[in-house]
Image 1 (cartoon, rainbow, N blue to C red):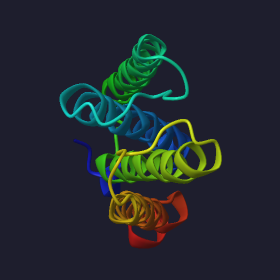
Image 2: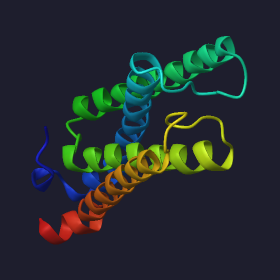
Image 3: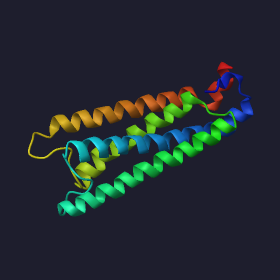
Image 4: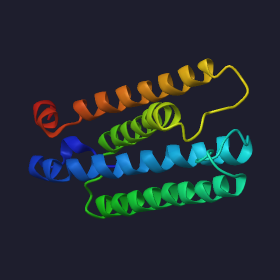
Length: 161
């Protein structure tokens, strides 16, 4: 973990974007992994694509799982590079994680669930409480992430340092 206040300002500016995007990618991968593992595989509540047969749903889950894995691994390569350069700014990175996870979950809950109707969280139940919990959680993660990103933007680092 790096103390950004001890980091040179030009270096903090140069790597601010990489810290954000590696966290964002990790957040996408992490929330997709949790969704896939918990709701698709353990609870069997839905598949990524429920508008066809179960076999096609399982294949779509496989592609979704591959996406989550590649996003997570790719982000960790970026983190390894940041650590090697001694420019990993954990607070900004975590802001990216929350923003990526929240944005993905909000996109999933609104676009994929409601607009495209690829799948629902659950079937044969009153879906409203699930949708509300899903989207409120997404909104809270997104808002927290954006606040962290604002607080850790390079201009703010210079003002605080």
